[in-house]
Image 1 (cartoon, rainbow, N blue to C red):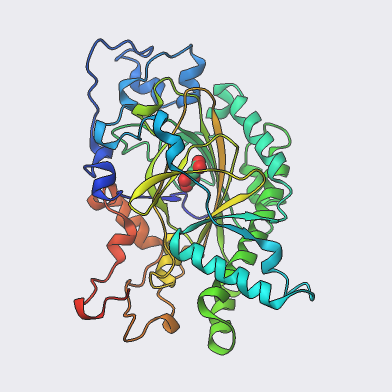
Image 2: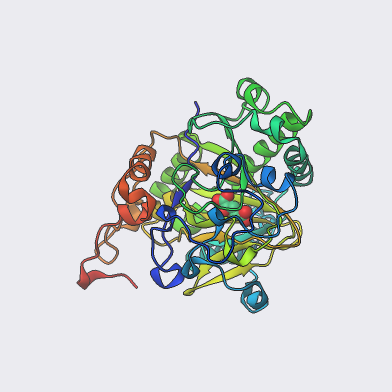
Amino acid sequence: MAILDLDLAPTTPPAHACGDDDHRLQRPQRHGKQQDLVGEKDDDLNLSKGVRHLCERGAITRLPARYVLPPSQRPAPTASLSSTACRLPVIDLARLKNKKSGGGDHGDRAAALAELDAACRDYGFFQVVNHGVEEAHSVFDVARRFFDLPSAQRSRYASSDIRAPVRYGTSFNQRNDGVLCWRDFLKIVVDDDKAAASSSSAAWPDAPVDLREVVAAYARATRRLFRELMDATLEALLGVGGHHDKNKKKMILEEGSSQMLVVNCYPACPEPDLTLGMPPHSDYGLLTVLLQDQVKGLEIWHEGRWVLVDPIPGALLVNIGDHFEIFSNGRYKSVLHRVRVNSARSRISLASLHSLPPDRVIAPAPELVNDMNPRRYMDTDFEAFLRHIASAEGNHKSFLHSRRIPEPSSSVRQ
Ligand SMILES: O=C(O)CCC(=O)C(=O)O
């Protein structure tokens, strides 16, 4: 079953982080003489073909006006970045799997679970090492070769149909973005465990020739990792035994899951401090597994400011999505993140978004709701997410925010 490919919930950073919250509706002004390579006339047509296409037409020395953010929404100047770099908590999957491999130190596994729990609560993000995803190198390589294909070949997969199983596009939400993002993408829906080998992969790009095989193998490996991480995070969240185990099993095994791969390409940008590769957003699903190269760019909202993630070579980055925040009744955080670009190097990342099947209702786990911790979110499903982003609110208000139940002042949990 194909899921919709709206992987990213457009959300609003805290007002003090990015200023006004309707930036997607604004058309930017740029003062001074416009020296963009792209003239006003053919602007929209060319920009709709994406950033790579724009760069391939000739050297760009100034950022076209459509990409220029209002000053209050621009990232901090590149020069100040080193002071805000952040090494996220590191989770060693081998320690979490100790119990299952029959050997090992159970005390160490308990400590690893506690570290995982703290990372999900305090950051909403962590880096995983010893993850066993050996396909990372080859999928990066094929992603790079895909974006190196001539524009006409990549554009064969361009579609305005948000339900298309494969879609090549640009910006964040191209139809609504007043200011465009400096990013092109290829989105691929992975129907189920067999997807790679069979039917849905027939719609996937047939160039480079090894793309289907490599992407399929990577999709299987990340799906396996997703299940292992869900297993551990649910144990950290709910504990083990009885009702908890049933709830846990239901979440990760019986109900199935949906997966979408998003390959992001952020070409080198002539004026990186004026724009973003992706605006602040959270991911709608349970967990996202992100593969990034060593070019820094991802920033997360942490303790009231944007911090730049310092990638560990070989590690995968994982973040909590909106559905998991709801299921955990707010204990785990679906955190805003955004992507900045740079003038020296292009950057590639690959996000694997894992969620429940689209028709599955998600609600706070009953064992996490009590008098001290009242229910904080309404039930929701993927359709509610779609209705939200199609509505007027969808352009400037977080989906998660729309699902919140106001807290009675006397029982606010700390
Ligand atoms: O490119 C990145 O580092 C992050 C991408 C991202 O946030 C996403 O695909 O949701």
